[in-house]
Structure formats: C-alpha cells, structure tokens
Image 1 (spheres, rainbow, N blue to C red):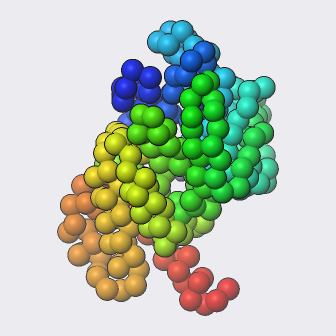
Image 2: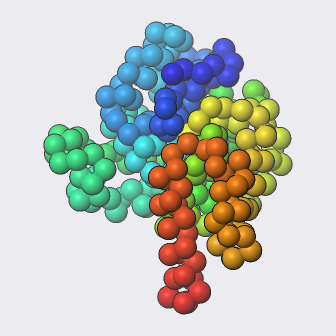
Length: 262
Ligand SMILES: [Zn+2]
C-alpha cells in the first residue's frame, strides 16, 4: 500500500510491516528504511522511477532492526546513512543472526549491506536538494533516530511510534529514553508523523504512543495489574497481540536484570 503525505513524500508499507518512506528531491530521491527483503527494495527503487522519474540516490536507516535494514543490499554502492550505533550493531550480525531472520536459503544467497555514512548525535544534510535533519534519540533501540523534513513539517519516527499496532519492545529498549524521545518529537511540532508501522498521522499518534508506554511502565512497576492494562483501548485495540506478549516478557526480564544489578 502506498500512502501519499504530499506530492513529494510517499509511505510504502502493508499489513503492519515496516514502513519505507520515499522522499523526492530535485534530481534524485531518498529512501528511509529498506524493508526486510532486497526484492521489495528493488521494487521501491523502480517505483521511484515510475512515479517521480527519479532514481533513489540516498538511503537512511532509522535503526538496525532487520525489517528496516535488510533491504539495504538493493542499494549497494549508494550512500547509506545511519547513526554510528546502527553500524556498530549491524557489524556484529553474523551468519547465524541473518539465518534466524531470513532462513537458511535466503541467508546463503543474500548478504546484508551496512550503512557507510554515520553520525553520532545530530546531523543536517542536504540530500537531492532537500534539507534533512537526522537526530539520534534511542529508546526503542539504542541506535534509534528520527528524520525531520522541516520544509514540509514531516517527521519520520521509525519504531519510536507504532500506529494501530503493538510496539515492539526488545531487550535493548529503554522506556525512559523512549518517553524522552516522544517528548522531543512533540517539541519539534511536526504536522505529519510517519510511524515505523501503521499509517501516518499527526501528533496525536505520538501522544497515544506516550500513553501506551506510560501504561506499560505502570504495569511493570506494579501500579496497575494486567486486567487494568488490557482494559485500556489504547492497549487492547492495537493489532499483533502476540507481539505485545513478547514485549512484556522482554521488559519484565529486562527490569528484573536491572533490579538484580547484573
Ligand atoms: Zn524496530
């Protein structure tokens, strides 16, 4: 499914899969997140030519998770931009990691491509004639970044925001940082926000995400029980309940490790 935010910015994503955002510039276009599959990334590349008449010349990864980066190999030779943490984490992905994600056959045939242009905290770039701000915030993962297109007031939030779907909370997620990141996004006052999964919206999807994380925090700290957690429609109405179960498991394990001081 392709969702049009403006004449120059399109969001490609389907059925809760990770969104890819295609940004048209003057004589080339920029792709934020490359999906799990190189074949899908190649299709997006063709789509950019069909719809804008522009080749994709730059790729940005919002964070290391495979559903946002494993399509990178379709753009071998281009500048692939990410936070330095993303590259560090991806450098450690061995064959077994890739096999667990893609399956053995695909893992043998394909390879992953690492970002080759990295930054630490903030970077302003002019790509394809467009001014783009990249900001490293962490939270969902230690390397999570957001991309702000000030001229169109569009913010690409990666997996810091999930709309209509449960958030993926992984063992390396940090809820306090995540809340800080959501406040940071709100303070930028973007008109449109592109989540990592689900449809784009306005700042209300950021507010809902904050309430969701706060509820989970209350549950973890024992201030509400699971029945109260489920009663909240902002929790129970989200899709992918199985993801919710594994997220809660991750966060409980993580907080236990923290209290044990390991
Ligand atoms: Zn993610």
